Structures are given as C-alpha cells and as structure tokens.
Amino acid sequence: MNKKPQWTATLEQNDRTLIFGYFDGRPTADMLEEFFASILSGKVKSVGSYGVKGNNITIEMPPGS
Image (cartoon, rainbow, N blue to C red; front, top):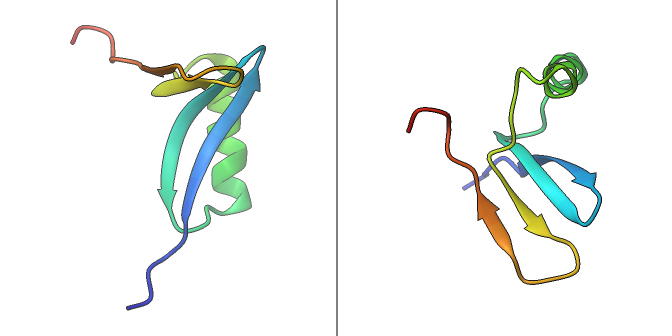
C-alpha cells in the first residue's frame, strides 16, 4: 500500500518545539504560506510542544474544553 508521507508543522521557540499541525502528504507552498501567516498572527495556536533539552511533552487543550 502506498501511504502518503506524514508532515508536521513545527516552530522552535527557546527550548521548546511547538507543534501546530499534521499533514497527510506534503502540503502545497500556498497552503503552508497561509498556515504560517495564521500562526504568526495568532489565529492558529499550537496543539502541543516538546522540550528540546528534556523529556517533557505538553499537550494543549483548545479554549473552553
């Protein structure tokens, strides 16, 4: 079976890597541009993060949950 590669949208900040999304297959350049602009403007929040220098993982909950 030919599965599409999994892609992850991450951003390193200080000692953490923030996770913003997962993609089934490689997203287009236009899609990534729009997604990154939404991250920078604060419209999209991270879904989790992990510590670069440690063994710590954080899972973010959406507001109101």
